[in-house]
Length: 182
Image (cartoon, rainbow, N blue to C red; front, side):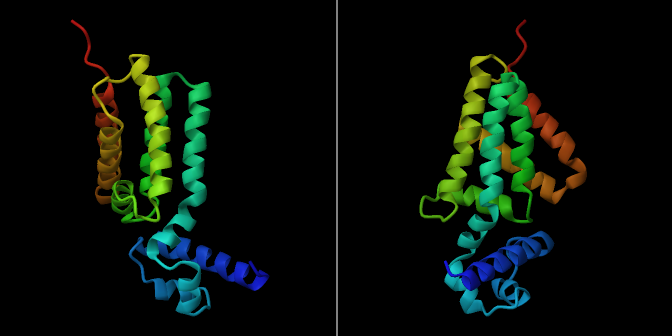
């Protein structure tokens, strides 16, 4: 990539992060281009769709979430590792208003620009879940897709009612634990 094209690309990413942080993921792409001091044709040349732009904006944080899963598996007990990662996944899904809906849609849509990143994130969570289930720290009747539905629900609740988020996540984590034996 030419140096001027690289600068434009980086300016667009910087402005997109700011705009998504301020107004959510549905912010105007034309406004992002304008804030970067560029025309919308330049934005669309680099990022033909909103999902292309989101994928570029989220790439590092999604990779970091995967690396966090690997680190947790190497260091923490299985149940603790899963709990820590669930908190990190919820925080990631609430990075920008509206992101959790886009992530869940992209996870189920193989044609989505974000699908590969979402399935990679799900794979990391699945490894943590299976490990915690094998250790007896988590119910064995919870599937990876159910775990992600719970994470999405907690992220949505966090976005909509931040004052209730802590309790929602606590109930989610408690609900993953196996029932006590009598």
